Image (cartoon, rainbow, N blue to C red):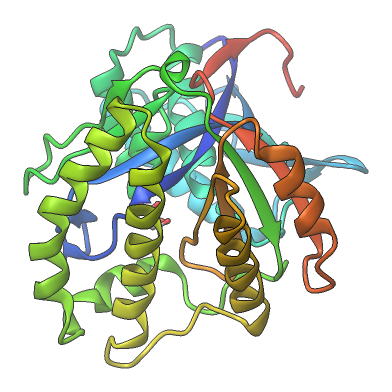
Length: 332
Ligand code: PMV
């Protein structure tokens, strides 16, 4: 039997994207990625052991209270529990309950925060001390590469060593630069093509080799811009990188289109704002929603401008955050 533990883990937004796997089974990335850990978009997960012989139980907390998770969601959680049990060499069944701070099905990725929270709460329930490196490897073993970065706060790099010893590490703490992420939700539906499929197809793009070659210098320049808190240097690099991911997706065989007309509308407004001297730039993951990275001074105006766009369904104001936290506020 184990105890009960609850962890709140954050989502993150990649400034240099993980896109493409050299080994789809183990989600081994082709390229290093670099993200900013968020503060408000989080997943809270409680894990507790059940009596021997019981089945795993997976619950979701919604506005209506705790409810059994849908079968596909529960299956992903149980598959990760199996990997975690193997790591811990235990056979215990578990009850897992989870809750997202951002609206479920808002089209925002919850796998990064979700799998990081599950791995950390699992280890805590078994009273296993895990290093940051170990936590990153455990989160990544879920198959979600971005989860490997959600175990630390601030600005986090996930290398691409080509093997299984590929843990993410913090580059700069959250206190280094108070960047904001104002998220424009333009499409609240689940994406048609999961990122798993996009990763598998990425290297079929005729431009993929060029992307990998260009990334070396782009990553170096993003790191310098972050270290120097140089927004003017960071902005064009972040946008170039986001467009590059979508260029690869759109030119994969078969092609994948994540953008919607509303995505382009928001991007146009961002260019407008920057021409007017506002410190803001845009990035998108494998979806239609747009993350507007900006300085604290620019944030209120950026949020207000987004709310004026009819194609924007919801605006979420987030910022760089400190990373996961163990809490006593259990879900059951
Ligand atoms: O963590 P995954 O396997 O869902 O892949 C995430 C891929 C992107 O969000 C598009 C980019 C990234 O680095 O987060």
